[in-house]
Length: 68
Image (tube, rainbow, N blue to C red; front, side, top):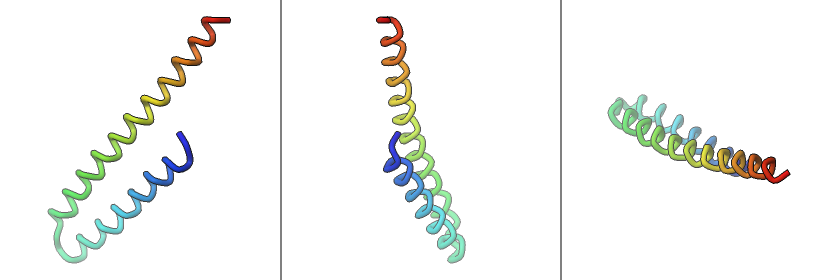
């Protein structure tokens, strides 16, 4: 996982938080709910990608241990 990935997820979280506050202030709570739902799906997809990279690195490490 690189710093760019972490900053992208943090940036999306910041934008979602600001939009949530905006929609709550204007009384559009249903938009706020759907916004959080879409953000949850995005973060879940990113987490799955991070886990795939992590377990790929673990697999490479164990293959390296097996060769030595």
